[in-house]
Length: 263
Image (spheres, rainbow, N blue to C red):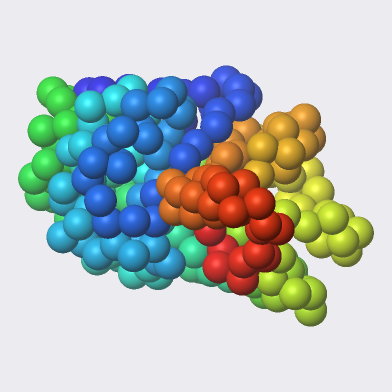
């Protein structure tokens, strides 16, 4: 079947840069995914996107070489299986707290005997190509988010869950979990210490480590630290930032500070 090029890169300990999609728009998904990103993640958790939108966005992303990934709303097997059947090659599962929850995520991504994913990859097999049924277990990336108080305490048992391919850090929720304001690009020492612990534990056990950022500065910094996959930003973020910057220059005024929306 089609190779998951991002997963293959992580297994070689190589680094990748991704794009986050939060708007339910096929054209913007197609246009931005062709910019050269290694992977593109469609966000069903916080993005303005539902499953019906996803069925149009994934084919649009397929016109590029980027690996299509989906962040599901929650660690629900039927949600995970549904996006895989739609053609996702990787799934990011939010708010994973312990090994039991990590195991459920992994099992939802794998066909028996490695898991309990139900067979019916209606578009997944079309996009994945010949051999999908036999090879999908090795090509689908299962990624757990560590971003809660319990998840931080139990990071080692989550990261060492058999079959887990990667861990993704949501910096804002991570901040909330340790009693800090929900700032994504964060230099507070307590926050950076937890981020470093997660990265070090992933390296120790050979699991890919990823993190969300909202700026080039932080993307470059986290790549220097050794993260395997880093989000450069989202299409909605670049749209609003670019428009706000141009408007303030046109008016000759100071650009107003926007409320932190996570994008």
